[in-house]
Amino acid sequence: MKQVKFLHTADLHLDSPMVGLRHLPKAIFHRLQESTFKALKNITDAAIKHEVDFVVIAGDLYDGEDRSIRAQAVLRNEMKRLAEKGIKVFAIHGNHDHLGGNSIQFDFPENVYFFKDQLEIAAYRKNDGTLVHLYGFSYPKRHVTERWIEKYERRDGADFHIGLLHGHFEGASDHGKYAPFRLSELLDKGYHYWALGHIHKRILLSQEPHVVYPGNPQGRNRKEQGDKGAYIVSLTEAGSEITFFETADVIWEDMIIDGKNASSFNEVYESCLAAIDEKRRKGKGLLLSIRIDQLNSSLTEVKEKIDNGELLELLQDGEKEEESFVWVHRLAYTENISFDRASLIKQSDFYEELFNTIETYDDLNAALSQLYQHSQARRHLGELAENEKEQLVRDAENVLFQLLLKN
Ligand SMILES: [Mn+2]
Image (cartoon, rainbow, N blue to C red):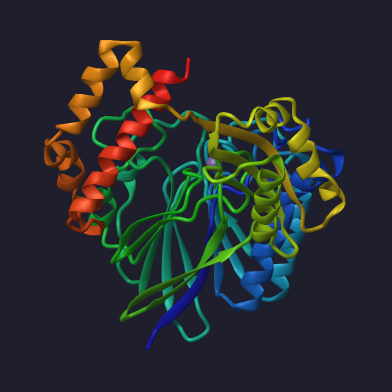
């Protein structure tokens, strides 16, 4: 049976300057600055380990149109490592590393093919004769808003067809985005795989055939959260299989700690420490944002020590020297204000009326209907039991009073 195996990555953003993060400790900032290179090395290692036939890079190899010398030098070195193993590379340039920029151009080894600024078809032939057609183009300039998808066509004669596209997946109403496309337009081409880039989030748009945004291999800020990586793809005549693997050296994460039952500074501190230990991952750095939820509002001292940064400092203690660091870069809390019905009712008729309205509330089904009519949500929701419905109303009451009494 004919088959081909390749690695799909995109949005490496090599030598990304990590804007706005200089306040981090030097060692951690340095680690971040190196992280896009480390991710690239992890990608090359994986390509070699899995003995892929070729690597596909779907745009934004570099972070800026000036393509730093170092980024090009490191990329060339890694490409040479692949060349030594006989692994080819097919790459397109995206909006960040478009062809219109002024940059010193490095020569790359012969195993690497960069698509030009018009739609091209590249051919890859395996030793056993299996033939692959790869389709793609590089951004001639930064702002490419034309519908390039219309230029893609399938040229018959190959066993497998792979599309490379750096572009924006269109929702119902957006426009003016880079090289936009609709899923149906991709599927209509009759390719076996679509290697997408541009969105820095892992998204599987379709499974048959696979249409994939791998996301970027290294998060560059708090918005680019969680595990980051790339895909090993194996295409056979029977279908395709994809496997995700991690590449990021430093991971961004947000977490919420339940502060409802904490009654002292020590308890809050301990639960933060436990959370940090649970998150620690061998060999990787973690940049963690913690929110302590529903902290009892009477814990004045705890709130003070969060507000003035003392608790944060305690949590950061000793971390910047760790290889597997967990650096809490943000610590916040929400309060749980305790309220007493009887005294509130005494205060004003408004509260009495509000409590009565909540007590006699019987419109829960209507309130939840939007959720239950949502096609995705419905699949994961069961029928609510009576006590669950009551709990929902009590929770809603609590949220309402937290907001009312906050000020
Ligand atoms: Mn990008």
